[in-house]
Image (cartoon, rainbow, N blue to C red; front, side, top):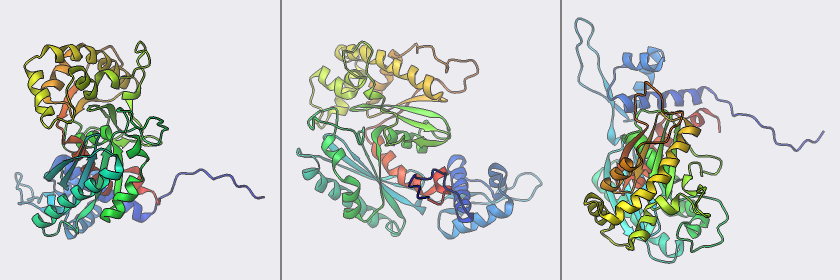
Length: 399
């Protein structure tokens, strides 16, 4: 019998996969809780003390953890806490947006060490790729200069840009899309140009990665980050991991059609691009972030009028997110200035009824996260760190 059908199965694991997973579990526990003793780690992870001791010895030898000052608690034996070594690993994050590119370097615990930005010239990836590669090289060179072992401990380059990915886009000039960049062999070009392992995610997912590492989603297993930037998206943290979907397009809520919008989407009414259009300002202006922040803080009537309309669609978006994903909280984050984001959250109240509206909630249904134009680049940098060190089901598999 010559059956050509593919055989479907989940990849198995082996002892090496289990050991690698346990290392990640230990690192994650130290990231979430700070310094812990071996006994604390054994209790928290339910690993044997011997297993924890073996892993801690490996991690110390690898320069990822170090012992801290011994602590005495009552009459018991003194304990030695261990913490992560920030200089144990580094990563570079790259954001590519319509008009600008940003690059950032972080250490193992997410501290920002270097950040640089450059304007992207017109012409798409043909003219933009040299600018992007030079920006990454500038950050990398400064990192090498500042930290002696940085190059040896550089785990990768994370890239973030607007989605959706892998869909047919007939209009290459559509301002809501980045078709030429999305069709360009970006990962292969960056990998060849830098020699680094390169990963790609959309900007909303990157912002969620940053929130999970150092922001409002830190320590949460189920959170959705509602990203308000040039476009609109949602970064989905489900079961403690970032959920990407079949083609890394999960959470593209900005593409959702409005029931009474005449073919328009959430992105057309509630994104920063729609705000720029409403105000008649140039999104490429170097002081655009400060300008919007100042006008929002001063209750500019034009901005308040936009907020009133945008809040309607964002309120519906939160209702949809809660109904479908049942998160512990929804986090409004992205490139919107703090004053604007704060007023958006205020205007979205009261939220629509949903299954998230129940007694005994620990976290608010909606809260403010990062309001920083560098958040996407920071999340892009956090992705290679997470890929190398966070507990992930895929890390256990032989594949």
